[in-house]
Length: 116
Length: 117
Image 1 (cartoon, rainbow over the protein chains, first blue to last red):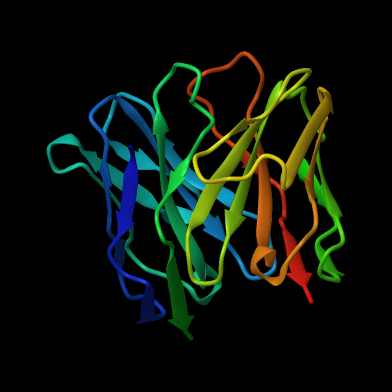
Image 2 (image 1 turned 180 degrees about the horizontal axis):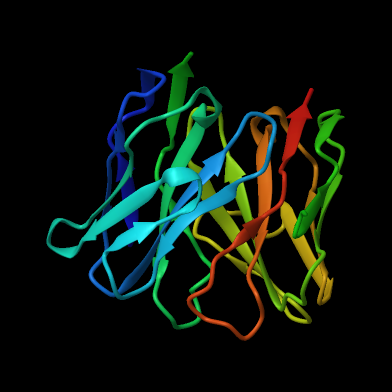
């Protein structure tokens, strides 16, 4: 069975600080990887996704993530956070292709608080 | 704009009653929808896969008779929590992926906060 582990439950930063949120998964096959963000009171939104190709993926709002297959990792990064990045971030994985492509396994989530 | 609409956003019900949650795909047809549950300070856990025109597929440990899923059209899936108990209080979220496309992202509804008193 798949599992996803996010290293930090709550991260507190000041504006302009750099961010890295860890995500590791366990699965033996080919996966698709996602980072979703949930702003307070809003629904989950896709930040970025990796299906294949360049392992460094750029998403919206200046976020990027790097897929390191040998480490089963997909860490999220942003060079300089803003107060508006305060939200909860979820790493998720699904089987690539097949019939279960829409079934996501989520990490526990990381709450990011950015102080102005 | 929103791709998936979920209703209601919040519901409080008495123990023993049933609650229906709707999930609508607004922008495209969805032969498959997914229902997740999120307990406080925990991750989203997949409950079931809703299949248009056929029975839902439930994940291990999820009671199909308690969480009734109906996917009667290509744009609507409903989750009914039957004989609700306080331990069913949770955040329920649906998601949709585009029919016929693999390796695609999922779009999520805004979720339903269910409180059973």
